[in-house]
Image (cartoon, rainbow, N blue to C red; front, side, top):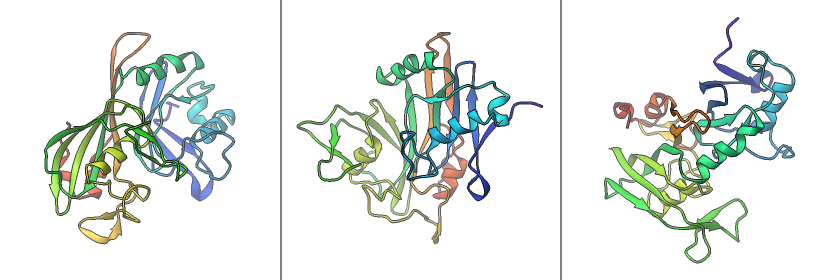
Length: 257
């Protein structure tokens, strides 16, 4: 029986099938759905602890893992709980540092799509506002020009609609909530961002009462590109974008940037 191109996690009604987007001898990339959190194993307040669920499934020798003879998967970067798209894991501990270093040294090219409130005045711009912790709100970050860490994101508007825009984001650095804060700083919060924006839910712009599930936050990681640190060969990973674009009325903007 061939190896499945998906992972199954959870049980019963909570069972989730997660698509595998790319795999080689060292890494495995998934299309992370909304709701799954990258938190410590000791975090017991959610049944959607992704690292813990993967480790449990591998220990149980579930077929998707057994067919690959997997012993472990370790994430080498993070996505927020409600951000969907490409999440990269390594298959053995010896690869954690080389791949983590690709992100830290800015050798990993990252591409996101976001749907924002309002229409930006410029088609292209960059934001270099530093980001630090918000001392008054645990879990939040803020623009902090005095003590914040360097952060940089470039943006391109791909399409516009009534009161909203489809924006491509290319983060140079990888600060927590960087894209969300830099778009908020520009006056265009991401739709569905309850932490930094104003919406309680994301709705399909064409039918205001219809939720744009499965995208509670209109932010999706759609591409990673890097040079394999062991083989020195270029790798490019893409995530499907049609469902995301359709959910927010931008299917005509499906061309690959």
